[in-house]
Image 1 (cartoon, rainbow, N blue to C red):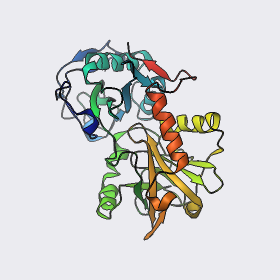
Image 2: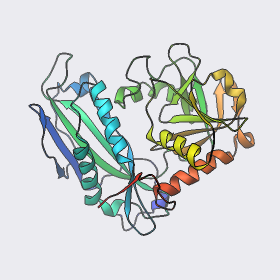
Image 3: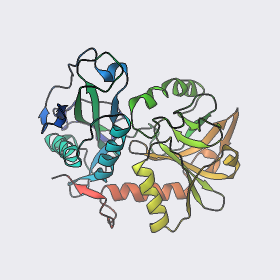
Length: 342
């Protein structure tokens, strides 16, 4: 793509090649210092553990410009910590926070002309990931690891943008097992969601929201984002479970809702039987940002929310507008969440 001729406001959420990415290697118990490279293809051993046994983790982040042209990251240290959590669960070497953030910043700065301009609604998506590589055959941790950061300009994850989507409440397939790896950001969780997602889209839904794998009674998360609900009394409720991803966006929204707007927020188990009490619903995550959920399909019945599911609810809109304004510097950052890329 040519950054000088790109129509930034028309970008969708897909991969686009940009010139530079960051590679670091772990071998013999230590990480090297890492460097920028231009090749976007990998040459790894056919016995690599990531290919056969799924020893792989990743993160999702965004870089955005403020009105004065500066480039900002949103809470990158939280992504670094979550990456370390995922590494521990998958028995992979932890990336030092300094190496993680340095790799991200170097990659952004090397590709800074691809960071979309302020006000276009587009952003530079950042994908740090780690693969278990090296010669291997048995089920055991990899002998070597690669840490990579690549970036690509994107538009909204859901092509509808900030418009209500419809989710199917999945009653057969599980996203993750209890006491499994649901809280780790590892590829297998997402591979398991592909078939249910395909079936849901064939039925006219945008995505799937999963229930717990033990009782199939409590909401957990969608295939790509955490979720929240607004109850009739104005309370915001979001699922609490050890089997879902610890979303940085969700945690930020909880703080904003409580501290900035004075909402009551409950982090708890939310039964699917409570669906009749929802007046708004939303999906939240790095890619989804805050996306209104207009309706949920459950056991053949469609449950519609605010404005018959056709418009975002006022609380969902307020959270979306505040978060997105904060991330591009239009709202004062009183918590030190924004980190400039320099």
